[in-house]
Image 1 (spheres, rainbow, N blue to C red):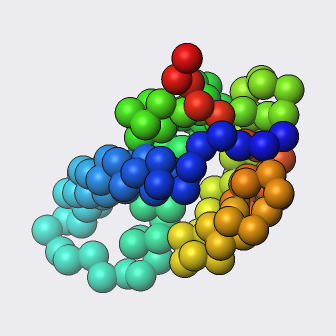
Image 2: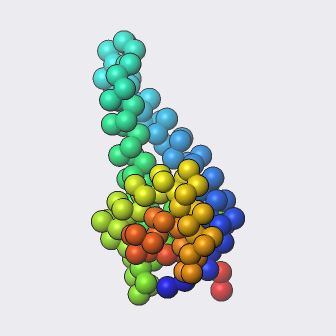
Length: 135
């Protein structure tokens, strides 16, 4: 299945979601720090991965699986689906989430420019694609 969402729209949506996820992680991490810090600074590098990573994945997975779109995708008027048009699964969202980190450095989006289906690396391997909601 071929995606009808341009790279510019994908990047626009990503910028919206970046601000939203940063705010979510900042807020929740602050609450966690207040609760567990006992007025001491938390310097453990493990904490700085254990809190943001599940929160970020949770935001994207719930948005993709339950509603077919994040808030950024909703603003840019497209959604994520399987080839038959149904909601994606949590396993697809996990594959997509982790491979998207490769796409963020550019490799996955270069793949989109030269792929006959016009989909980036993370969509190719998760067997998902983006489709426009503009009628």
